[in-house]
Amino acid sequence: MKPDIFEAPDYYHLDDLLSEEHKLVRDAARQWVKRDISPIIEEYAQKAEFPKQIIKGLAEIGAFGPYIPTKYGGAGLDYISYGLIMQEIERGDSGVRSTASVQSSLVMYPIFAYGSEEQRKKYLPKLASGEFMGCFGLTEPNHGSNPSGMETKFKDMGDHYLLNGAKLWISNSPFADVAVVWAKNEEGRIHGLIIERGMEGFSTPETHNKWSLRASATGELIFDNVKVPKENLLPNKNGLGAPLGCLDSARYGISWGAIGAAMDCYDTALRYAKERIQFGKPIAATQLQQKKLAEMITEITKAQLLTFRLGQLKNEGRATTAQISMAKRNNVDMALNIAREARQVLGAMGITGEYSIMRHMMNLESVITYEGTHDIHLLITGADITGHSAFK
Amino acid sequence: MKILVCISNVPDTTSKINFTDGDTKFDANGVQFVINPNDEFGLTRAMWFKEKQGATVHVATVGEASTEPTIRKALAIGADEAIRINAIPTDGFFVAQHLAEVVKNGSYDIVIAGRESIDYNGGMVPGIMAAMLDFNFVNSCISLEVDGNNATAIREIDGGKETLSTSLPLIIGGQKGLVQESDLKIPNMRGIMMARQKKLNVIEPIDASPATLDTKFEKPAPKGAVKLIDSSNIDELIDLLHNEAKAI
Ligand SMILES: Cc1cc2nc3c(=O)[nH]c(=O)nc-3n(C[C@H](O)[C@H](O)[C@H](O)COP(=O)(O)OP(=O)(O)OC[C@H]3O[C@@H](n4cnc5c(N)ncnc54)[C@H](O)[C@@H]3O)c2cc1C
Image 1: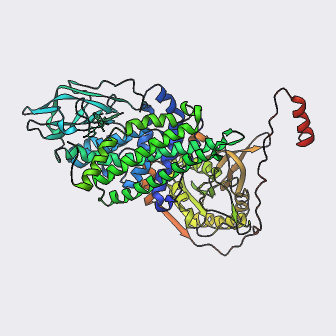
Image 2 (image 1 turned 120 degrees about the horizontal axis):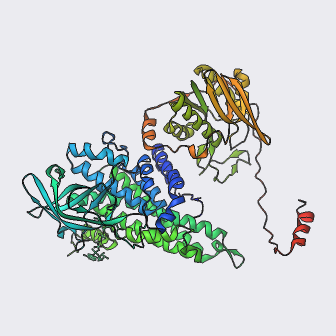
């Protein structure tokens, strides 16, 4: 891996819109990624292993629940800070960002928003410090885009619940200490349950041979007559809206994260194009490569403006699910296209692990699928503007 | 033990340097500013004294409000309090007079400055301050230990090192080597949150004037084209080095 000489593009001086604290938070995350992620990430992606040693650092830069109030161990920051942290982490690697997104938005958020005071006190500080790692079980083998059809279910046994079913494609599952799991009760209503590693009948086999998010561990959650204490049910929200509320928060972070991956690809391609000489001149001096690079910076700039505005709306509590869908869909697609174009700018060098582009490109294939596929987000926008849902 | 770390706000090393107003002024447009690296080594050492020997650490800078992110970062790294002298740092003499005033009013035992800042490379501030305050002074300092009122410092000298024993009050001009680069701190979230609460005192400049004025800046001539010589053609290389580059 080459030394990390990344310089972040800021074509429209967006930094001027950020507060001093936003920049402090962002720069700390950027510095940390350069120091602790860039030198090791290629090796871990190549061997398809999550680098566990970075958990402490992720917690220290505030990647776990930055917007959770300080009394529960969070940092009490705003949503723009959260977005900036996600952007910087994904600049390093989408897999590492996935770990942080899951911990913050899919584990800490539901416990904070739907949990009891006891649950908040018990889990949130340990999740914020990285002492506990969490995962989120919604997707099942037969229910991906359509989670409402889920088959995982629990039965009230008087003094406990009995949980049965299986979840698939679960980020962090192989090493998670706790899982926020969505399952139906006997009336078919979706509820969230906190499952802890060690409960009898609960196992988490790892999914191998991924070509994407290789530095993030993905696996299953299998529940075979798991006895769940009643106090582990999230009491304050149920129905499909509960897991979807978590997804809003995670998708918001992804819309920022994707910009990070795109910036890294653009920065690498721009530098390479200026240095690579063919036909007696830098390839950056050719119109075709300029078209690629110019379109990249245009798309990155548009995406930055989109997320900044979305961040303001989120801070005011006004960002809608449909608005978040639009940003997630646009930005991940933008990043994937930039990764593909940037890889070509580097010619054969682009396919090697010497550069980050191909890793970003493969990672983004997951990012465009999880947290709602590219198609599903389009349908969300479609339903929002026409009033007709085209899902079924 | 009370320590003052003097911090200079300098362009990041990757910045593209340009001048305006007929090459008399630095063009700060689009430039990222950071803590001067020599000062960051000093701040890191000061944090060590805070952790291990219970020192109180203040930071001071001479600069306009635009320098506050740099000082806030120093607070997030762990400094207890910050002082900003609200003036444009015209030259080293001007800066040293203001910082000396802060030292006088704050009764510090140790002042840690950088050997030089990486923007104008003046290398004057700690020396002038030491003279004005009548403090002991060690420049190009690569190690500092303090025991009560006594200090042991190591100084980098041409081709070697010099170990000095001295006493407080003391000023050092720190540089690379004062701490391990791996010990440099990235502000963590706790630090950033605590920095919100910490005092950043803004004080107005005293009646001081610079001793020098910038009249013109010049950039080094751009690098010329590279000549590639076949590795089998040693004679041509020697000829070019001798007759054209006049390097040998
Ligand atoms: C690396 C990775 C990590 C993941 N981590 C998690 C996790 O931590 N927790 C979790 O719960 N899940 C996780 N997922 C699962 C992810 O959210 C699902 O893969 C995603 O929701 C899509 O479901 P699916 O794969 O079953 O695809 P399907 O839903 O089967 O979709 C297949 C294709 O059909 C399209 N399609 C589906 N419905 C429609 C429709 N109505 N109209 C038009 N087209 C349609 C889709 O867009 C897609 O192109 C992860 C996935 C990956 C790859």
